[in-house]
Image (cartoon, rainbow over all chains, first blue to last red; front, top):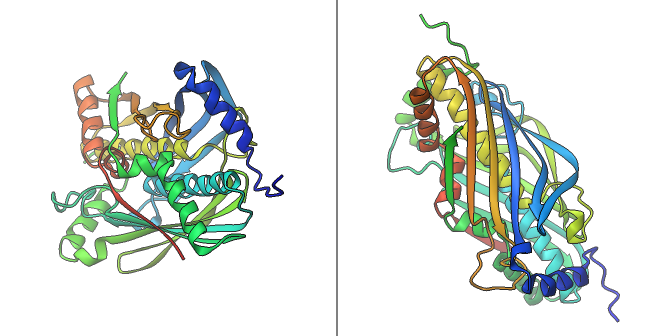
Length: 182
Length: 182
């Protein structure tokens, strides 16, 4: 009997793994978002419904996210920039992974903090230099973790989290994105 | 004299381009985020400060983002999933680009809506099949745009937005991500 409780229901995830092994079609998820231009570079994006386990699903509530550019770009700063949303996704994905893997390995977490830095040469998006990419040059994530575990075991937690992270994969490997006009 | 007003200060962006052409070091931005594990797979990520134009900068306010997993994953659904944040970033980046390019081309926008779908086979993150990637299989973005322009010119707006989009690049091309434990 472990008394470790990180709040992750690992048994449910292990059960889901067994069920989905025999039902690959149920493992096909579609995440959805719909956005509306407001004014300038300000937009709002709504997220609630998604598809998975063979049916339409829904978050408990709809969440609305504002994105804009800061005042130094002559905008109104009604929200964070689009590229900063990628850091939110990366931080939360790796953190969720650390908690899940810790639970599975019987390691009690006390605190997990991450600080992220994404380097971005904006000469790309401004069209100044065609050799400069539009996206991040690189991203650095630094975890500070307090847990009932050795430094080595904590490093292994973080490594396993990366190995199974949806967002880490989405940023480090290419994805096909199709953009159409209705 | 154009009377087109999409709320984008294109002149300021063109001026910035001229200034940054001769000052590449000022174009080096660092976007920052810090996250805290709450419980289970729930975390909060804070964004406010960033570095750019050779100095520390700040959004007007700090924004806090909750991420969690939905109840069908035996979690509490205190926020959208990490991978959904990538769709927020992509929607808002392409939309900002459409508005900026339209302003630069003298096209008055009336409405810009985008719907996004990210296909995700969760057998990857569950460790069921090593041949299934962790991230999105593919993403589809569909714009519906009402503007004073031909279909062809609207299609060209969207194409140019992709060409200069930071997030489109970050998702369609690989970025080096380093993860360390402090």
